[in-house]
Image (cartoon, rainbow, N blue to C red):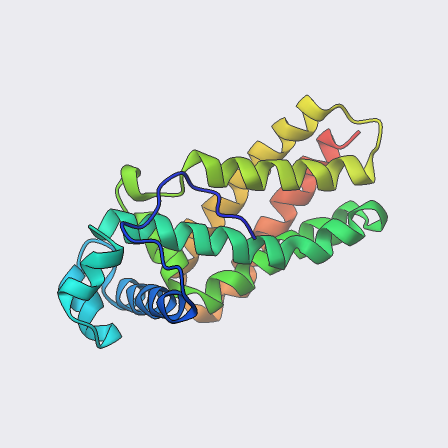
Length: 202
């Protein structure tokens, strides 16, 4: 899938070996950020985790911000794959099923990508860029229009913006909730999302 962000690594890999190296560096960055948090993660720690020299890391990424943007790119692409089945089924799903699947897919993604949640604590400059958010907004708007073809595109985009804020609130809260209580909070967010869409999805 195409990259969503305008920023690029310092060195763009042109061979399969280089692409694998970048993937390994990003895997290492995700592991370090997931364990230590964004602020405590360091370039030297990421290089060590990847088994690479710091110079090798700098060849591809000049700083931690560039790594973060690359991770957001990766997560955006992966999230699109997660939502692809929803795009296929959106026209036939009830609002309750749509709400449930949106929340459930987000929770599964967060649990499988712990650095994704850690990045929400990053400074504003390193958080999900507007280009990524716009991709998600357009995808969500498409879900709503598929279920209600007469809905205008501006309204669908407004709904999508609010839904993204609801999902983002769950993402921010999720790491703070005790694991034994998470399912209960997930149910609450499903209710919030369903209530909102039921009131506006006309």
